Length: 398
Image (cartoon, rainbow, N blue to C red; front, side, top):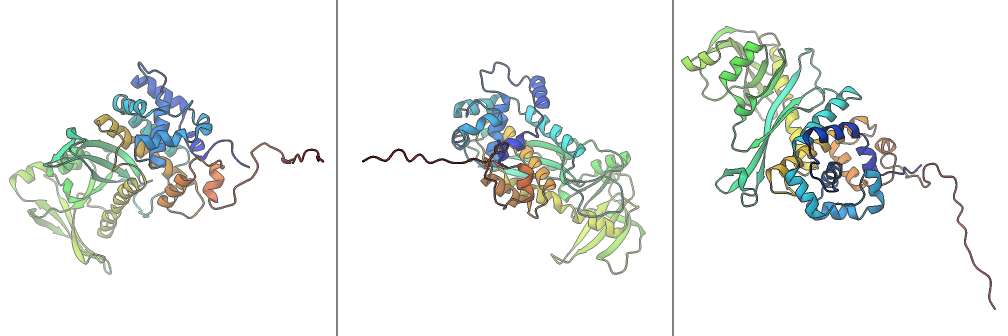
């Protein structure tokens, strides 16, 4: 049967309206509002992300073209460009930030968002830490100065490998070093954090070791260390060397006065050696190498975010508008990830995003469409009986 609501409307029904209203009241986001609600703003920005609208004109015009379908989205009409622009510039971005974490917790507790691809025997929480820089035009975003003629912001992400969605997100100016973002993390003892060598900070490593947090990273060039104990390497593996070390240097030893481990693995794809540094002395050397290899999932996360959603061009130039667009992009990616987990069709996340964009306002049952996206759509509205068309020929005239 044909649904009486579009795929877009059915998707938004999974955003709890009571929780959304609570967050609006908490942040006083509709204070002095005159008709245009935060829900209307949220729907417009989700349409921007899922339909990949490039401007305020496309957002408002696209919604206006679907006037008869807006009632199912909770809207009385399409917003004006100036109204949406003002809301993005002045309403708190923290509303959408907290909404993202609320939805992430809701999906993780209900149906889940997927499963870990790499099968490890250990039960520790595995996390990846990295950042991506979004380049901006300095003339349009003067508050985001980064280089001489370029602006930018940086999105720091701690990715949970249980479902490959963020456990922590921090949006900063692009000139802030990655190490400063890592210092703000609060991690549970026993967690394993894998990262590239841009996060090398002996003080941070010493603090994590004292807290019982494990890390796996690449050893930075020029690091000074001495071998304390050699370890056997497994036969037939890509592990070239495994030894326990201590840092050499008064400052390095003061920052991290613990025994560490250096594991050298061979990368057959790029034909190079990779020197890994970790404070985990229990796991096998092969497992350490596989943990670092699984770090590639955070690169795939950034790729999916930038290719399928609107985070490289923005519909507002203020810092608040930019933050709202990034957080709504993360919410849209969360919903896409949830749909991808529910679907029984063998398609990639990028194909799902593309097909949803083309069918966003189509009246189809969401779950049926997810399982069989290329099936023949129904012809009769839900709840309606057979419809017999009549043809009035009128009376013949002479």
